[in-house]
Length: 277
Image (cartoon, rainbow, N blue to C red; front, side):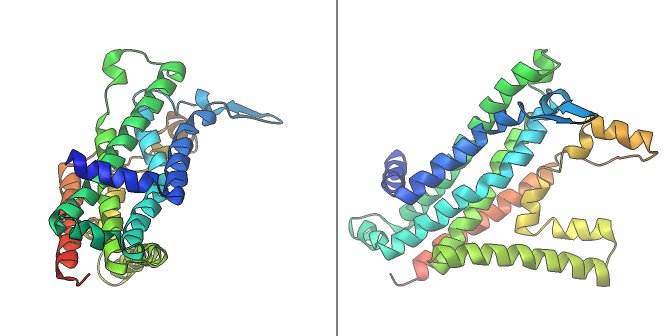
């Protein structure tokens, strides 16, 4: 497996566009630290973002994993481009001629997906840990290392999303069309949600049904953290509102994403096995 992974990373590193996107992705993840330095001083409104609690343990694990997940599109482009380059450069055919089986080829791509997910998760963990140690009001180990489940959710969210992108790259062959299909699928899920809620069920039932759709199930792994912030809760109390949302992670949400990941990898293999290269 190490040999397969080495082959993939050599291909990626020798591709200038992929190299730029990968470096840009991790640079942006690092730039989260710059948020800590932002200070607003507009007349009577003065506050420092780091002082409103976004980097407090254990909240930081929830906040950072939710925010950084939006930048996964950088690696999504790398993954669909990785597949389109295999077809356009005919390296896929050359790999198979050189003795690589189709199963090993898909395995090498999946290992790349897992590697990107692992590296991203470790990177976010280190950045969040450093920011938390600098700015958090809490330094007890029991508090620092609580809620690490959000990092697990972040990993599975990326792995599921990248597996979907891998499948689209094999299905469509061209990176631009694959990304276009990804956007269309997001729109499709949004329209489906609207139709189900309008014609059939109430909001809670609709949310439960949509939780089985691929992109929505991945999004559900990490709920929005902003209303959980103490400052937001305080403002809500002052205006007589009560914000009570479910931020917990549920085992079945992980299971749905894992199932979709397995489906996308299987479909990728089935498609490649059936297709005449």
